[in-house]
Structure formats: structure tokens, C-alpha cells
Image (cartoon, rainbow, N blue to C red):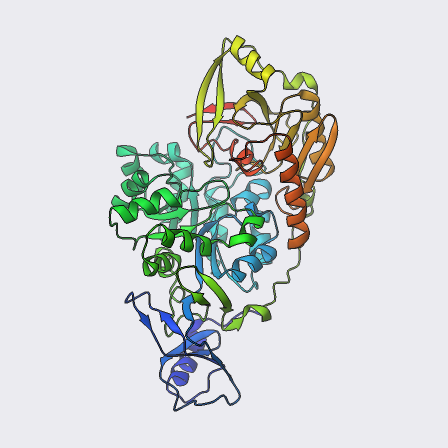
Length: 568
């Protein structure tokens, strides 16, 4: 059932605060983290219709419960629910309801999502399906509409989204604006398509995506009306963007781990964090289940010396202000009763989470799989032969160099002779990206260093952002078998060795998400990752997430798409 808007319960909250109407729940005896004053306060928290009606001393008016509930917190801390300011739910590889359950369990009650992953596969019908599927989930599920489908003209996605199409969804109350504008050359060059999208969302939030952009180019990018950036890999990069007024979303995901460098710089240089928030961008469900998302960010930031109040502000009210969310992000009257109860503020030890005043254990995360049929049969590629995987003859090769724990890459150069030797001794591997939406036959072949695989192949249909097939291997026959296995399982992950399928993880929803419940999914994911590790994949990278970013041409310095090697 849809929740009432604030305007419909305003008078009810007023009368509850005045003691004229009884609350549904009182939280008593807690230490309230006040994001407005930076202090710890006390007081009864009165909850009515999913909102906080009042904070104060109501011990005489309500000394005991009568047709409502009183919970004694016994000195525990109370924070507003955490906000994940930028996330791609599809990157968790499970359906939104399964993902939302784990987010809320670890205290994140609001997520701001950019569904450009499924948008690249299924276009507008896919976006409409996601909005329908998530409408009644017990989490604040906000959407930024994908700005770059495909992300560049140098690849082929399953769909193309224009400004005219995106406008059809912008009046949805859960749509906050335009998702990460990855087409930096299009912004700086004032391309018609990009300008049309920016103009269409001029009065909305517009997310940025500007890795390693600097100087005059960064100023020009900000001048376009871009408001946020989550791609800063270092403190120096973050501070340059912060100086120009960009809101910095500090990212700590499964592949890109930028929090330590940025927060350490913030602490060492006493930087004001009021225009900074936390995000994960892309994080595997198994990692979420181990440590949460924003909970993990808060804990790491405090351990690096950031004051606990500043960390909690970044996790709550800062993100709410950046995205214009009026009733979210604080423990105060008129704010949603999205609350996190903690034993320990610095270790972020969570004992209970409330969403709209309802404890986590009572929340219903059931969801119907509602999508176009083609999203369940999305792996369609042209027939592949061994000859298709032959490297083009060249005197010199540009090679993708993987950087540990990062999604940026390093361009390396090899002569023909050195490349052949490096392939023979396993220093280099072949990597291919195969168009899988419309069976066009487009295929890019290249070389990669630092992946570490031996005696086999690894392949995935999760290939940011166009989500074509990516396969890496040290022999052509295993690479072809890996691609065929992805077709058989309707998308996902697979590990092949010596002509045999070692492990596979089906992701049948668009080739991106599993329909399995959490425990079954994580078990199979762990087996598949372990199988890749057993073939020698670099221990400092995620075998699949890192691979998925090798096809994203908007990240420096070198990538590969279904159109070939792409250099920035």
C-alpha cells in the first residue's frame, strides 16, 4: 500500500506533538545524534504515521503505553537512517527487493539509484519495470534517470535513450533528476544530444561522472550545471572538484575503494565535509552482507580520524541536502521515522533499524518479477569461431594494464614480438568484448595485463555500461566455450578450464541480476569467484567486477568495447 504524503498527515503530527493524538510508538531513553548542532541530545521520540511527530519530555503525558508501544533504548544511540547517495542496484546482481533487504538490515533506509545498467540492456521498458517493481518496497528508492545510454558512441548497447524519452519519466515522484553524465566530451563540446538532456533536467539534480578531469575542462564541465561527482580516486582530485562547488560522493565499493585516500586528506587538511556524502556505486551483495554499505563507510571514516558527527552527517543529512530530500536525513519532527539504533557510535554497531517507524523484522520485502519477456532472454550474439579471436597484426599493441583495487587502467605498449612472448608465458591474456543484444557480430579483441588467469577463461554478461559479453582467457577454445555457456545460462558469470565448465552463476534478469534468494545466490557467487581464484586471478582484484569495468570507455586510460580498443 502506498504511504501517505506528508501534506496529508501534517495536522496529525501537530496534534500528536501537542499530546492531543496518541503516537503509535515512543522511543525513550536514547542518545540522539543531532546533525544540526553536532551534539548528542536526549528526549522521547514520538512516531506517528511513519514520521517523527515530536522530540521532547513526554514522560508525564505518556508515563506508560496505552494502545501504543514504548521502547526503552537504555542509552543506545539513535541516528537517522543512512543514505547511499549513488548506487547501481543491478551491480549487486540480485533483484531490487533482495538488495533492499540487505541495505535496510545494515541501516541504509534511502538509496539513490541510477538504473543505467538495466537501461542499457532494455531501454525505457526496463526503466518503467524497475520503477513499478520498487514502488512499495520498505526503502526510500529514488531514481536518477540514465543520461548516457550508451555511455559513448564507441560501443553498442541494447538501447538508446534520448532526452525526449527520458522526459516521459521525470514527473515520477521518485525520480530526482538526471543520472551521471559520463559523456564528458559531449558536455565540453556542447553536443546537441547532451545539451538537450541537460536542458530537459535543468531544474532537477544532475549527477556528474568526471574521473581525472582537471583544470579548465573541469570548470567547463561544472559550468554545464553538473552538481555531483563520485569518481574522485584521490584527495587532490576530490578537493579540486569540491572547490568548484561539486558535491563529492565518497565511494567505497567492491572494486573502487577511494574512501581512505579522500578521508585521510580531509582529516589532515581540516576540510569542511558539509558538501560531501557517502556512496558505494557498485558493490557485490556478498560484500554488502558482510559489512553493509554506508555503515561500512562511516566506520572506516571514523577509524581514519574523521569526527563521528561529521561521518554521520555525511551518511544522512548531507546526502539529503545534496539531493533535495526534505523529510529524510535527521532525527527531528517532520522527518521520516527512518532510524538506526546503535550500541556503539564509532564502531557503528547496529541493534535495530526502523523504516517508517516499523522495526526491520516486521518489514515486507516481497516483490513480483515484473518485466518484459526479452529481459529474461537477453543474450543474443552472432556465431563465434576461433578465427574471430585472432589478434589483428600490428607492429605495436596498446595493452590494458589493470591497477590493483581501482577501476582506472594504465595504457601499456608492446611490440608484436614482445606481445607474442608475453602471451606465451602468461604475462598477457586475450580479452574480447562481444555484442550480445542484437547479434550484430561486432567484436573487439585486445590484450590485458595484471588479470593473472592461467589454463582457462572467465566471461560475464555484466560489462559496464553497455553490458556486452566480456571474456578473458589464455586459450581460444576455452574463451569460446565460456561465451557459449553464458548463452546457455541466459547471462551471468562463468569460469572455464581445459574445455570444462568449472562454475557458473546465472543472472537471467537482463544478464545482470539473479532471481535466487540471498543465501543461495551468495553461495553460488562465492563458488564462482573461488573457481576464478583457483585459476590464478590476481588476489588484489575482484575477478568479475574488475573485468566488467574493462569495457567502460569513460574511465581512463584505456578500455575495450565491441568496436575495439579505446584510448582516452
